[in-house]
Image (cartoon, rainbow, N blue to C red; front, side):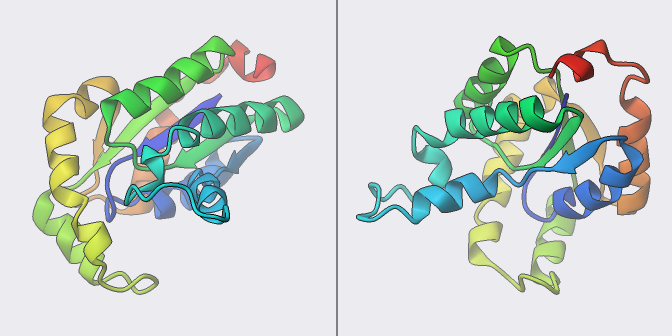
Length: 181
């Protein structure tokens, strides 16, 4: 099984994934951004797109890597990764579905003011124009498709440990697909 934590920068995906992992037996965190980093290290470089998610190999590589890890160790993968392009989400979800991997898709949501404040006050990353530039596309994706395809959890005023507990409580207690994944 996969627990996909979606939402834009500042919504709490990374923090929540770290707090959720101990609550979900036999779970591991898979940072799909690392797949993008591998692609960014190819020399000579792949065509410039401004975002590794735009490279066609990224989406199937994320799904295939997740599948292979689950085949190897079983259990559950927690994937904290922003995907704001509907086609990209559909490609990843379809690839995972072809392998009968159950995906629980959660969107961690916060209002725009809160997101921008969190981005500016991030002690690890510091203020980031790249992260700020994803707030408006997130708002548009949330309005047009994203919130319709996931369980939305408002993190605006909710601490990350409460968000993690809520996600854990929303998961099925007994999932036969988890043993097959």
